Length: 255
Image 1 (cartoon, rainbow, N blue to C red):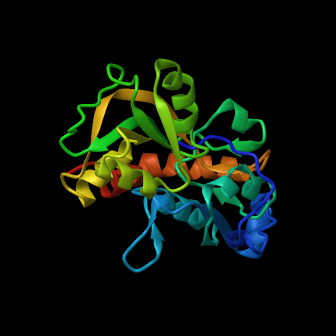
Image 2 (cartoon, rainbow, N blue to C red):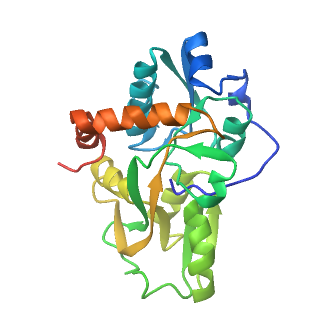
Image 3 (tube, rainbow, N blue to C red):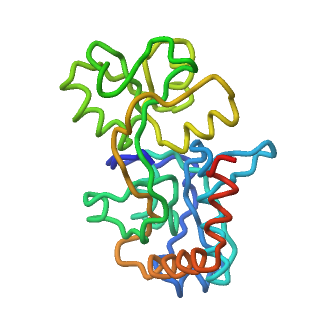
């Protein structure tokens, strides 16, 4: 998503129990594909009313598992532990969580082909009472960013030199609460998040100004794993059959 590379030595308790599968053959042998995801990024991955993790990314991962002839196991992992440690350590077989493809990350993990083109945008309170706009009104404003995301990285490069103050959140929901309360002028997030917020919370949030940056999401695997090629085959099948568009229509495209 949004997400920028973070290096940390500590793995959360949600990672207990290693997957230890690097190849297609190993995944097929154990009969399960373990997906790591941070379920706080609707509509890509989030917990539904029944507590189950669902979303656009989850359905694509299920399709990959189906094509491999195995079941999908989903593990909720905080993003700071997910990228790249959960993948490189073999704690999960793959990761999907709106993860942006970057040259830096590609040095330590393998990506699938891009499966979604997104953009970093400014999320403001409904009606935009502060009349925030990008790039016109940044100087002197407090802008929220989620820790260790591409939004934080881009904001550090582009907004701080223009006089903005960045407020960093571990929890995206806390940033949204501050936007709603007027404690920050805007929060940087992914474009589909704005559409989802408008659908779930009518009138509370909207996008302001131009896109801050464009980015591509990819499925993530251990470096050199042939699971990336298998995921590419699934992605190509979904697009050729029309299933990919159906998933877009279900989760992302505004009706």
